Amino acid sequence: MSLTFFGLCLACMGVSLAEGFLMNGLLKSAARQPDIIAELRSLMIMGIAFIEGTFLVTLVFSFIIK
Image 1 (cartoon, rainbow, N blue to C red):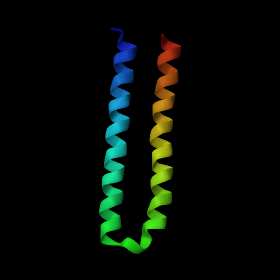
Image 2: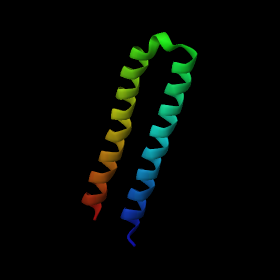
Image 3: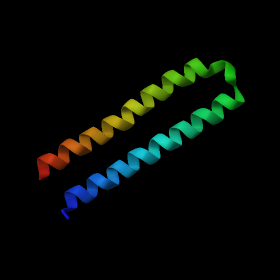
Image 4: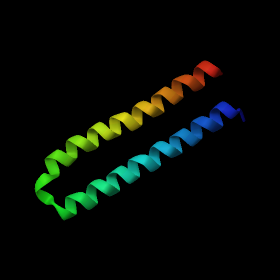
C-alpha cells in the first residue's frame, strides 16, 4: 500500500470526524437556542464547504504525487 493512499485514508477519516464535530456543535447550539436555527444552518453549510474543500485539495495532491 502506498503512503499516498494511506494519507488519503487519514484525510477521509479527518473529514468525517470534523463533520461529526460540526454537527454535534450545531445540534447542541440548536437545543439551547432554537430561534437561531437559520443562522446556524448557514454557518454549518459554510463550515462543511471548507471541510470538504480541504479534503478535495488533499485528493488532488494525492493524485498529483502518485
